[in-house]
Amino acid sequence: MLPSQSYVNISFFQPPAFLMIGIPGLEAIHGWLTIPFSSMYTVALTGNCLILLAVKRTPSLHQPVYYFLSLLALTDAGLTLSTMPTTLAVLWFDYRLIGFNACLVQIFFLHSFSVVESSVLLAMSFDHYVISPPLSTVSLFPVPFLLKRLNYCPGKILLSHSFCFHANVMKRACADITVNILYGLYVVLSAVGVDSSLIDLSYILNLYTVMGLASPRERIQALNICVSHILAVLVFYIPVIGVSMIHRFGRHLPHIVHALVAYVYLIVPPVLNPIIYSMKSKPIREAMLKVLRRKGQG
Image (cartoon, rainbow, N blue to C red; front, side, top):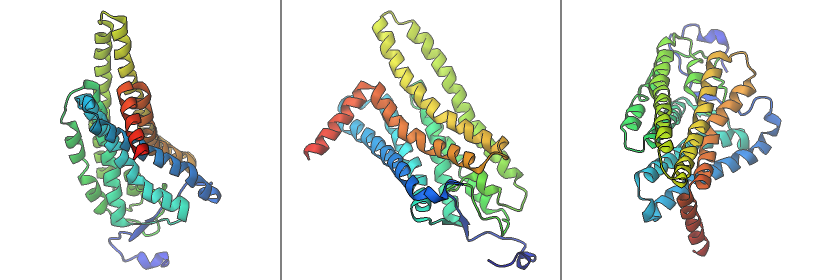
């Protein structure tokens, strides 16, 4: 690397690449950590692909609620694929470089899939089609361009994760990032904030509806469906809130805390959602088992 004084006359600088890290303090066992990470990625991709195949191949599941579940599975698979290559490259091969433009692309897809997942959960809670997913995704188009316009510090190329995160990358700039902060806040409030508030409202209304059902059996069936949705909502939103709070107020926390919370946010929901829905929804569970049996016979 060139000495710092050689950058004095540079008015605008963008690094050709950023340097990613795995889990701070655990570098010596990164090779072993690939086992649980690879297992979680495998479970996430396999489980969500099974849901997609189950819904596609089972005519009785061709209903709006299961189409939403398919969209959730597709989103979870996309979120998994957004971080899997760089995370496993860092942990497995100690390959830590990511090009500047590749980093921006990863940021777009990572945050887009997160916002779409929030919107799909909202749609599932109301059980009808809404226009939220495309509108939320469109709001993320400016994010890479807002990062592209910034002047970066030549010596600040070390990221805090094994993937690119908007809040993390913008702090590597030697410029005013007020616009980035405000726009990021707008995206969070307009997408996640509004979605979570409407989801709360929908489940309050659902609870009133369920309690009005005459048959105790119908109540149990309706509550069983609601429980699976609520668990999926909690699995997604609790890590989202944790990441937001840590990036805002946890500057003095150890780096390992930032890394672990980010991994929980990005990996745990895609892993748990197929498990939750296969356990709580008998039609989905039976359809997934049929797909597995067909694969075994083939």
